[in-house]
Length: 262
Image (tube, rainbow, N blue to C red; front, side):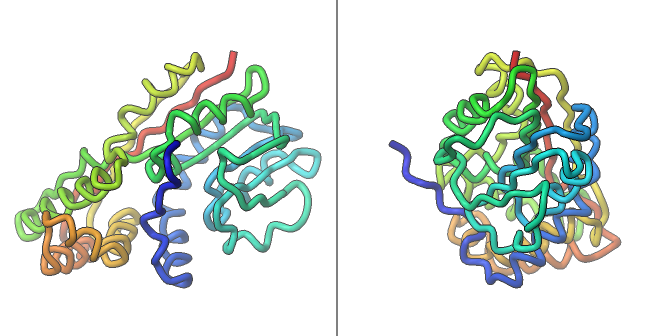
């Protein structure tokens, strides 16, 4: 049996982790909203949000289904979800594989959950069992292997940090290119993949994703350096470049998949 995967941000201080989670919202929420809207989510639906984080997508789902609907927010750590106390919200602190008698759902959404778990096939199989017939599974995962620093000044440090990011995931038996393999993994479960889109986070420094990656580099500095692929100076340069509006980089890409249970 696989041992639980250690979350790479587990050691991040609570306030810094909350700031990082909130930075992710403007970078990723608009695309998540577009994908979820394509499912037709509406009043009365039962929804499950796995890896609910600080709750922005949970909030959006609750507004979409109304008080006659149901929105369950699942996370291993629900510190940032204390405000969701009234209908249609329910908060569950648990691992997804430990869930029992909680479904079925019209819609299940997860963003950047599988990238942190070595049990991806088991999680996908579990999510399938929690879907109603014709229920929608919407998953979004990153492909860090697509990252490329564009400008000359920060290119070499950026390339070394990008290599360290991939090496860190590989060293934990995780897949840094999971996003591009996600449609195939889902289709192997006999779920019908009905929509796939990949978004490159190609933007200038101080852009929404650039700031997320600067924060992440500083929070994960020791993990990056311990791979031997980057130095402390490289991490400093990467973070400086990501906060410099004159730079450009493709920080990585996010792949979104919508699938249905037949």
